[in-house]
Length: 221
Picture 1 (cartoon, helix red, strand yellow):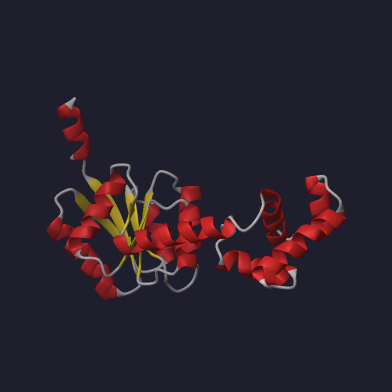
Picture 2 (cartoon, rainbow, N blue to C red):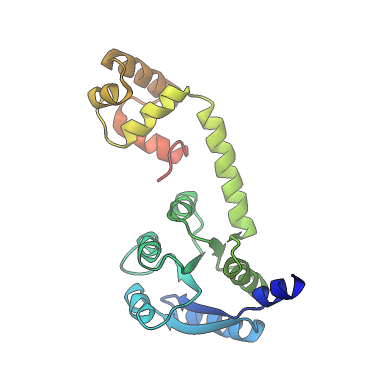
């Protein structure tokens, strides 16, 4: 049992590094080569197009993906990776750790997210954790996640289950008539719930509701 566990944990890890800044690309690759005996960088890409061309030839265990690069959004790239290469793990690297960016990335199903400012040792740890089937979110990111989760819980306590259903359906673009039909309630009941929601959020229409729901983490995007 111990021998099997040891051999599993000692498996080599193949990685592709994606970043549009040559120094960052070279720096990350160099750090990995110097600091880890397990991780091998099998390719680098300075654009998202280059990444997918590289994936036609290489089958890495993990992609280290810069979330902010010219062209396609990093979130869309992660979605495409999930569709076309579901077995490839994704570790996102970014200097931008905004709540909305982080939640979008988590909703895609990435395996980890760390800031580019972390020390080399933490980068190596993140890659190894993820390759071994764990998830990894840096300390700064973990604090943001905890804050978001706490705020979302507090905000959702303001509303009834029915009101939260109506918030979700409004944000999906449904009209009051469509919501009434979907929930099998009257339009008058829908409007009463919406007025209560608007009053709680200090807003006056459905457009403002969508913005408020995203800002206050009442829905996932």
